[in-house]
Image 1 (cartoon, helix red, strand yellow):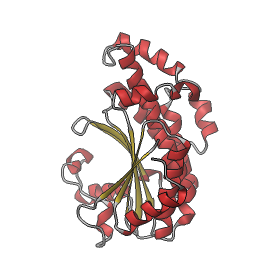
Image 2: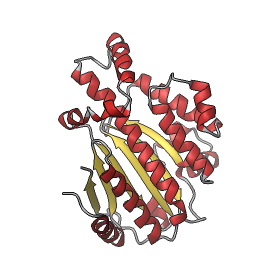
Image 3: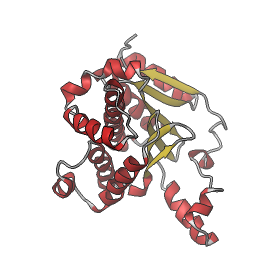
Image 4: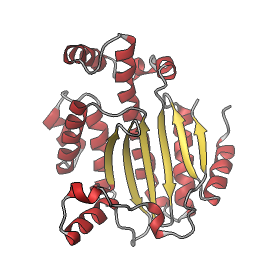
Length: 269
């Protein structure tokens, strides 16, 4: 049932007071879903006196949700058309149709398919006085070819200072994901936040693909990527070797966060 802005504020405020992880589940971001994102961002940032990060928090969260929804369009379309996404011939056929369905009015038509094929987008916010983490995930891993292509654009995007520069370089050759990820990187850069605070990963083990942002709330917070590089240098080992033992999360800076915090889930329409 749709709740008023005041009711949403009350729910989120209670969750933040209890140090709960907050998750929004959506199949297709609506105006109501956008309101939920705004309330979550503003409530957390107000709690830690960092409302100055409101624009980057809301804009990045919204862009990542939209980006994840476009990824769901591809999966839904392949299933509707009975195409094997792992077959090269089917993939090329499916991609041509996918590009035709990336306009806003066509994406809306996929909502029932998202529900039918269990393709939600989950936006999760977990935080401490030192950092706000935003994780937006799909419930499927990337194909090897997808991961190579997206990571290539993701890595190259760090050299662009504006979306215009990025678009001039790649034109219409993106599948829809590159622009969204690049926009988030540029938003971070313009907000004075290290682009290494933005990461992307895909896991067959957990059957998910996720984009994650770390928004520092205090000067003492060190981004996970920076800490990883520092430890790799200190131990003089490879990245692959360090990944086997490396642990670092938002709770290390605050003793007030329970080891297994409860979760508050909210649903878009």
